[in-house]
Length: 550
Image 1 (tube, rainbow, N blue to C red):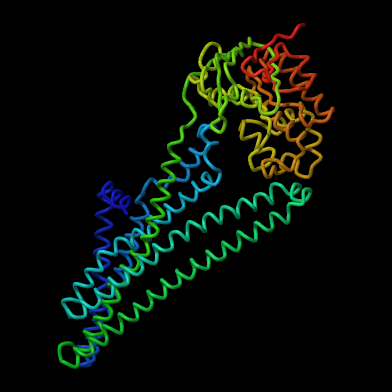
Image 2 (image 1 turned 135 degrees about the horizontal axis):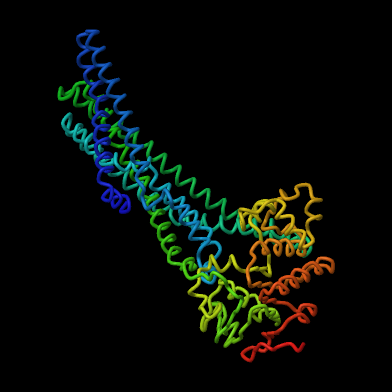
């Protein structure tokens, strides 16, 4: 609610428009009650048709204008941008794809997925209809005041019932918070199991994991169903209480009103009009109470988004070379993951001159892929620095830098879409002939053309349906879109047959022959034989670049 009030203060003109339309609509909402009183007291008593026509016409006009004012208010509320919601989805997504990879890895996947759910929660809490309901709540006092002028005892009993119902609704909604949080956790666990079933079908079948996964699924579903029943039961209880108190209010107003009519303190028209006013006073208060839980969720969602917003972004601004030579230097570079106590890389020093080839070897987990990610700027050194032609990489624009690198990751992945879309995402100016030329370089042109879709073949699940060898060569073709002076290839021949490997060797030879600097993480003897230098990360702190005798 604080955010909504703050937004009202920041937009005085829109706020005045909202308040005026709310006042006009709620004043006009008094007309039906007045209409009932006048019809029963005037027309029924005297039977003058002209009186009925006049009253009915005036009431219809009032109802029409009330509708117009409420629609105008809704349109104004829809233009009220609480917490920048109109661009919130876009901003969160841009932040998501721009956060430094090293910090992104520290956040649990479930938390990251919950970020976009938080956006939806904020939008739901501060939707135009909820803003309008919030603005209607204070005008319950208007209906109570009108009821007080009509009959103070009926006003008092109405106020008491409204307060009682508001308290009960608030207590009921507070009891639902923990249930809602547990349901969200259960949903997350269900989603994880679904992802396991989709992403690892072979593992489930080969290692007889179906029974284990099914048991977990049953357990989670039972817990989820129990929680969902509790939630539905309490929600139904709340709705039933609202209906019960609404009925109780009618009974109380009519009963006390009837006594007053018999005593001559009230007439029948005023009694029925009072009942209408009491119902109109109750409705906005009930609506406001039901919104409180949404505000609590919105506060939690806002906290999640604020925590996410604190993650540092990659540096997109910075220096750029008109003509990068390909020289690269590591100076006292250390790197340590937060999940490890010891550094992955420590005191790493080497210089690569333009056109030289460095082969990086080492056991699994020795830091080969980490080194590759440091070079392309996905990770930052914990200590030391990396320089390009003598300039610290931290001072360079990463957008520019990555457009000047031929990079093949160890685990190639693709965006959801077709082969053509994946290439066009890297370079929108590529033609189909240009894509086929790149595929031909890695020996995939004929293989892709033989498929039913060709370049329109969908790469679902990050391309995991493709064999590792095809996926790796396809990623290499995509990497060749960038004609940079530096190539970083992480295990380029792993999982590739001899025919496919020959195409990869040709690509590396062509890159080296054209004067590009190459960093290749590999144990392949063919690659080692063509390197100018070898860095064995198994040596730990003693790791140095050794030149290969020619």
